[in-house]
Length: 310
Image 1: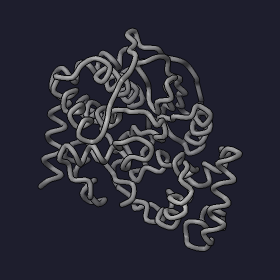
Image 2: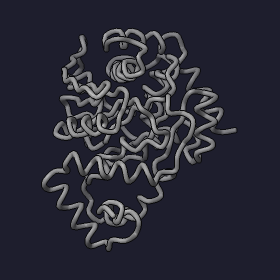
Image 3: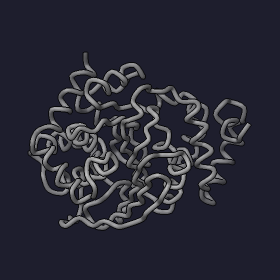
Image 4: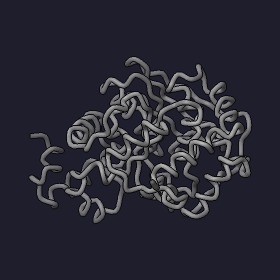
């Protein structure tokens, strides 16, 4: 029995869990440890079935920045552009507003089980999976993680354990040191195509305040490059759930422009690239902007909110 299986199956005392998590965080988690924990959690997940052809776009969190819910807005843009999105997420960890905080604020039901998520994916090409509902084994370590108060290996593996078993992903990291490790794990797990991205402002997504680093994984081959948008901004902004809900709606209906729209469009472009809708990020930006301007992203938003409340 591996240390992670022991930890998550209730066969390890809290003191030992605390010691292990602390030791890994202090020295830096290895690629093998990230892979091992990912495999254990994937074997314990409550699965969302029949939608392995979807993509996920989520990040590790941890930037500590005031921010909008970029990947959530981008998910609606992606769906509006014909990409199925099975998005895995949670409430805020380090910021003021996580993906599921803003979804709740715009009127979506977030307490959806696997069957409801499958229905949403089938009917709207969108499914949002609230992590605590799909990873019951995580309860075994929740008290220790809360006591420790710092980010652990569990924050790193969150984006790697999507309940829908997607093979294409965009994963944002706030710590550039773990980007290559996550890329290696994705390659080891046999992902068809993925991007691991990091903003130079420590954003766990592509940024519009400077350069972003991208590691592209396709058929086991890793390629690293940098991307800088043509237009740069001093800040992106964002706030709590109410403010971020206003921004989300504003980007989708066209009333919010500037940095907040551009960062959502850029990160949607990354998703379109992974989904093979475009061949490069520049074309992805143009396509994502067209999806927003045409109203297709807002239509997907309305469809999703309506379906979750039936």
